[in-house]
Image: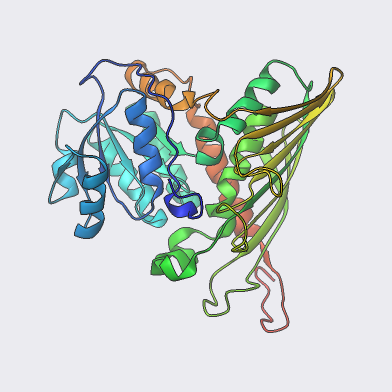
Amino acid sequence: MDKMDGMNYAPKGHVSKVVKEGEFPFAVIGLDHGHIYGMCNGLIEAGGELTHVYDSDPQKVKAFCEKYPGVKAVSSGEEILENPEIKLVASACIPSDRGPLGLKVLDHGKHYFADKPAFTKIEQIRKAQQKTAETGLKWGIYYSERLHVESAVFAGQLIEEGAIGRVVQVIGTGPHRANANSRPDWFFDPESYGGILCDIGSHQIEQFLYYTGAKDAKVLHSKVANYKFKDYPSFQDFGDATLVADNGATFYFRVDWLTPDGLGTWGDGRVVILGTEGYIEVRKYIDIGRESTSNHVYLVNHEGEKHIQVSGKVGFPFFGEFILDCLNGTENAMTQAHAFKAAELCIVAQEKAEFIETADQKVTLNS
């Protein structure tokens, strides 16, 4: 796992199988983003059996098969879709293609697990909502910065236990290192990746809904900019937004591609959660200037101040719960409504965003 490269950051946890061998075969279509490795790790550790892979790029397939010996590379996605033994298809294809692929997967009677952002347009979500209602199949979304981060999982457990009372406000930061020279062309095209608020903003909005227990929210204000990467004029390297939830909780988040080279990881992701009886700060990947270790949780409430380092102590329950949801028709890992609502709100934030004027770029969106 490369801590310096967010695109290929693929956490590993303890093996905790929820199914027997051969009970949950799954396959992969689309290797455009390195998140697919984290997605597969989580499913395998929970007992899923990775059987097949397809991508049009043979080099990506070769690297994938070296990582997962025994997986069978096939010559087309149709071979996977038409295989009756496969129960789920996971994908980290180009974001704008994830929605259309998911419709095909469900049409072939299989569950779907997409990297975020799972959609780049609202109409893609509406089609997915209709398809899941028709089929009863799952459309999972890999919101990795909560689902695959032990400190973020632990924060949710603290909230559920009532450690800080009712959550009333959340502040999230999601800085990332761009590593521009190693990125594919689609990474710089908003039509392909959806824009910064749709893309990495999806992590932020999902965790806000989860931590506050909200079912819906309104985007009050959002903005985006390109401060640094002028060689890519359509790219957005900064974005932020303010939301208010249907239960009165509020949210501010900032995302960017401006992580400096001197940081010991790909991004200093954090979240501060304010409750009526205390607050929690999560330092997900590093505690700068102090420790290079990750998963630091700071809790302050009526009992006092606590610092808890939770790496290797919490695990990643989502994956096992998701497999069982697929098999049993339950919604313990994440409700379908929650997955789609987070995706919808990040697109709304993106569509409403004003483009910040800079000295060398006099453009305003939605004017």
